[in-house]
Amino acid sequence: MSVLELIKNNEIINLIFMLAIILLVLWNIILSISFTRLKGKYKKMMRGSSNKNLEQMIADYMASIESTIDRVQLLNEEVIHLKEQTDRCVQKLSITRYNAFSDTGSDLSYSIALLDNYNNGVIITSIYGRNESVTYAKPIENGSSKYPLSVEEEMVLNRCLKSKR
Image (cartoon, rainbow, N blue to C red; front, side):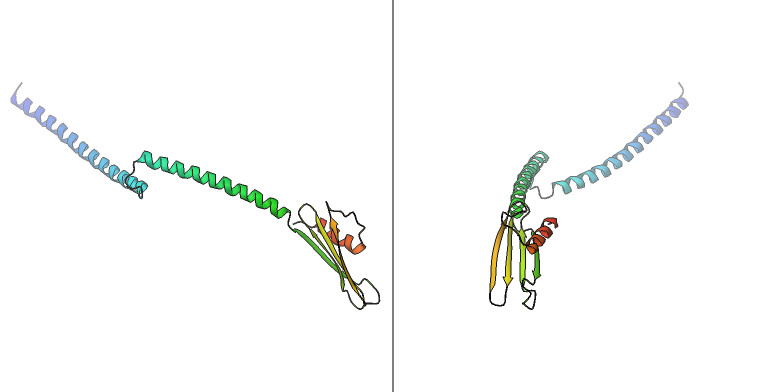
């Protein structure tokens, strides 16, 4: 081999090494940028973790989730209990005023129906007369009364039964 060939081969080898070095430098820059971004994301994720490792942080997060599930279950039970209570409260109301006697001047008599969500409750009626006024109540169970109802009482009861909460 001649010196010229050796020099030519040496230039080619140098050129190959230079290209390899340039590619490695570019690869190093790309990896450094990726690492910096990843490090920023990691710091953001670990913020407020007080030097815990990722495994401990996930365990704490899972404990927090379990606690939240327990609290939601408790709140759900309370909502069901409140629903049961409110179903027994007055949900439906109807009132009508009327003139019970022709010799009185105005609609001073009235009937009020007060029912819960199960159509249980009471009808309160007040009959106004010139000399006296009488008030009485009739219990309602499952939308009916065991006592006879007047026309006005039937009317307020039917309005209540037809009304939606």
